[in-house]
Image (cartoon, rainbow, N blue to C red; front, side, top):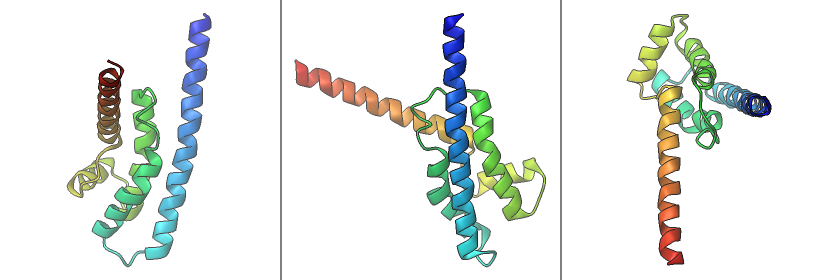
Length: 133
């Protein structure tokens, strides 16, 4: 029973942390749209989102355990801003535009970051073993 309680508290803490990142993501997106407005093309806006907003949303996600619900909750802000940019309410259109413009879905971006993080840890552990011997 104690293990379940500890697990639930950990999950709640993770969701609370990522809610803060979602707020920061929206804040950075609104700052970008406020500066460049509707005058820039969709390609430019997507590149700026990829370079400035995505790191804010995916910050520290590689060190946490990732569940499907967390992936969906991180995909939601991307979907809503894409709906805003392309002026549509269709998730299928938004997903297609996201893939064609080179902005990875949140689930893929999380997995890629986690693989890079774990490979760096493995390399560091291998180097530490070499240095100790």
